[in-house]
Image 1 (tube, rainbow, N blue to C red):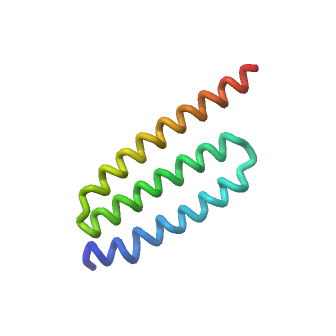
Image 2: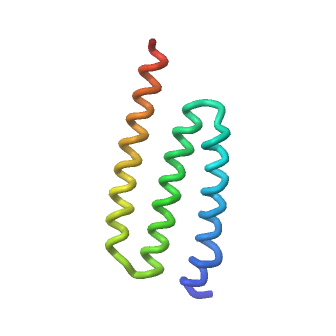
Length: 90
């Protein structure tokens, strides 16, 4: 099995199924914390999809996009957690 076939028939379907399952958690999550974690996980899985696509198509510029997206996701998660912590203190 070649690397391209492994990407197409194993990795991308697993990432797609995981995105669908995390979307269910995002909409169904009982608390705000569950939704924040689900949103962060969706972005992380999206970074994985971008990375697989970048390797598959040999487009190095997309790795820069994935790094920037990871930084934005990290900062967003920190902002949400700060908001949740301040909300619980009141």
